[in-house]
Length: 460
Figure 1: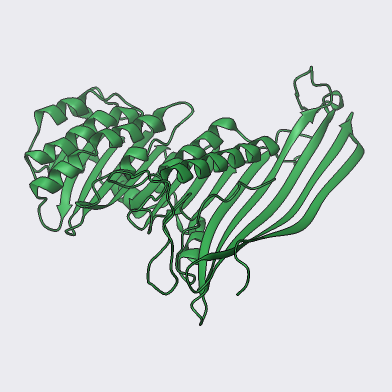
Figure 2: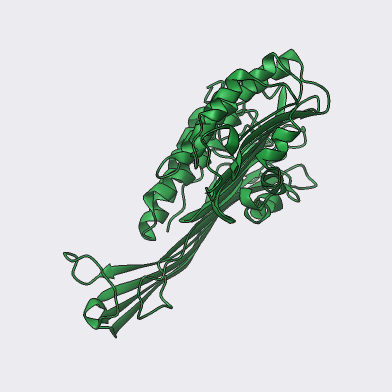
């Protein structure tokens, strides 16, 4: 599997921190269902909230809550969430409201429940906590502020995220689900510092779908999980406030889209799942706020001057998409239908004593997949305990690629040469079964390493 072509000047980050942070990011991010915030919401029942209500009943919010039926999808909470944020313009005090089963048509028998947690932190240090939950016994909402009360400007900035909040909840309720988080990444960074959204839907104690999203000026991450697959992604946004050449960014995003599509096709992955990955990838590479100046020019970078190169292409990132494994052959339970894809990009800088320097960008891709192919393409595969159904080819794919681009600059900041190294280690195995018996096995390895150096300046 070939990697996307590196586009533009790579972004310089700290050798010791940023690279390791991005590499380990997919393991440090947990799913929403595993967070303390979601557990805390479920621990507070509507009955408890009703008994200790703040007394600040809001007729509009109460009406929205009473209109929600049992087992409402997350999209049903979008209007309620927007109303709670908009209410901050007039009422900055803490607020809580509950509708119990005895107060409405809600049933006590429902086993489905859901929880939503939205935290918005301002530059001044205050954090707005918004929670919504529907569980056995009713619906409960609360809004409270930790720190100083929001100013008019802060309340307006928070309320402006209402539509984006609703879009995210609506997307999660679609079939197939979508992660529409782009609006939540575009807040007024001069007023707000960070946004965190966590959601969870359960049947009894089993989580059916969960989301954990965070974004600030330094980094963003997403962790999504449902019964079909899981997705984790992080993005180093520490230098993305200056988007640089937006044309180069769009070219880089398009190149990565092709790379992701190729991985899906090579490994027979799910189209909708990969579309979600691509949507999140674009959202986490969107400038946080402010206008974009499209210049198309690269400013000269002089080593030792303390300046940094313009940011082009995409942020350093790590991502992982894992499809839930399936055993669909009752006669060979060791065979799995699976798809797992990981990718990352890291950028490091090395400065030399004479003022020259090197910037190295490393892109890694790993694809592991397995799937079935019927011997007769005109007949659908229907594996069962009858040997007459056991006519197929079982594919396994294990692909690894590392692409490293090093840009060497002189002490005067001039680009002297560019070195590109590619290492590929792929293996595909095909096992052909006829009437349940292994008839043939073909192993196709692909392993090579190549290097290319483009000299721009002759050695002095």
